[in-house]
Length: 124
Image: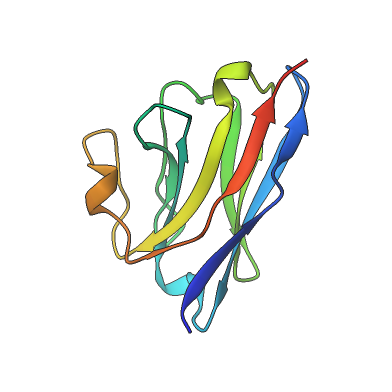
């Protein structure tokens, strides 16, 4: 069965850090662009960051630029999140597609495969 699995979420205080991981079961992530999305209660899903198949191109939403870093290593994709803010709270999902997304992409139309999500809560 082809699926993505996220891990690394948790509860952290404002200003803290978390590192999310996205791994694949049944296929390799190296053939796909990988994106991270998040959804807060009562809000629409939004694209946070993306890395291209070649790892050359990355995208970050304005709200996370300078704080989040996406990377790929040994078949996994990571999202390093620093200086976390309460507004970063939500369920974080990773997804795979052939081409990277940007700010104009509709999150509901992107991604062949999606994970089940991992909860990130930023609170004091």
